[in-house]
Image 1 (cartoon, rainbow, N blue to C red):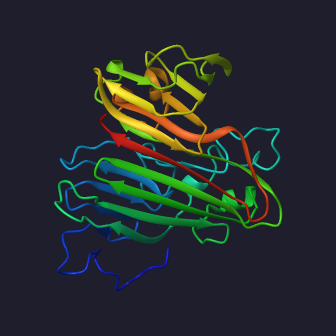
Image 2: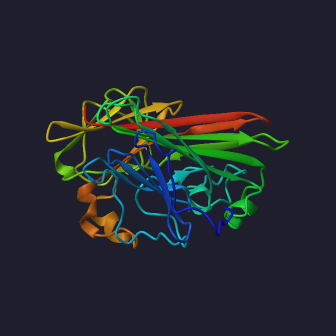
Length: 320
């Protein structure tokens, strides 16, 4: 990201217009925070373009972030919405293009460039107007912030544009991948979203009934979902499904996750023993207050020829 020694403390709307969203930068240019006039906000860490906070108008946090999460660029962030690209999970040994990459690729371990903001202004009452703010971030094979290990392990020319759009009742994240290389490349994309809940034992996940999934806790066996999902132990499943995924707690809808061009969704919770074994997962009983619902395209590979682009997005809506 280009340093701006004379940058303003915030980007604001034209004086005289109704209150509009604002965008503020941290003093060290590591964080970008966008706030709607009605109080909703998001905070994005330029390291990984990781959304680390999403609050509603009452300042209630909607994303889970480990209290031990590293925000200084020394390791991937545990919590929020880390980006997975160009490979999901441990790279498969038999896939030559990605076999040397670190787990989950390098998008989450690279410093992204903030490209700018755009807003949709309210045309009436703030409480009912159509308020939104969109933040755009970029990462390319030529970027100074690209993780050098990732660049060495995956020497393709590419361009990524990541957009984070905050509305009063929902959050949308979208990623566009463009192949700028002369060669075709394979890639996978996933948004590793950590949702915050009060008590995981009261949570149900619906919308995946009758869907096929790979159960990574049970030797990667293929199964079919029957009814709602309840988290009663370590859970790590890769579903292939259409339609929205609904997260409820105590019978009340907390989140509705819809996907655009992302055919998979991972449902993950580490539970007791796994959480104990992760050094950056704190508090150790934090698994009780989080649930990962991760839209992605990870069941196979997206093969992009020269000049091709792939776009995928998720929208997380609050309540029913």
